Image 1 (tube, rainbow, N blue to C red):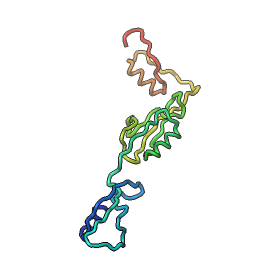
Image 2: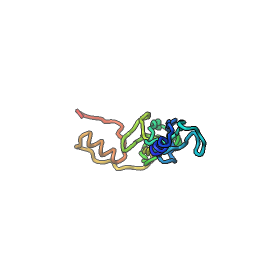
Image 3: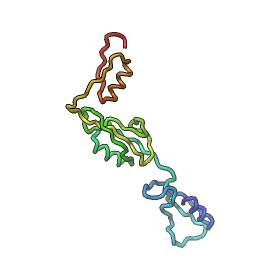
Image 4: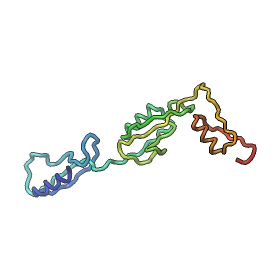
Length: 167
């Protein structure tokens, strides 16, 4: 533990300087990763001991732009950005296999959003268009908002609204 190490060294008469704070995901947070001079070295009294410590908090990383990228390419970008894949949902779309949307904690996020290192990002992936036949729901008498909700729940995309009167 960094705090314990500093106290121990200061109690022995050393001056302690945190030389660097890095993040290593395979090490415990808030520990000493490296010291200079190294352990076992003989040094004069009142010398400085330099410490490199693992951060006590997760660093923030920028969300990359994944929309329009292929699923496999998006996975590689996530990995290089120190993010992980959460849930994957397929949505009917002509861009089969391409990322349509990126979400974090249930919210759509855009490129450049800061996320904690290692966060899980959910992806909406285009499932392509198939020759599958769908039963058109009865929308007569509904408001536009109600009708939109029903057709979206049935996996149908709203392309145009043709009105005889005010909407």
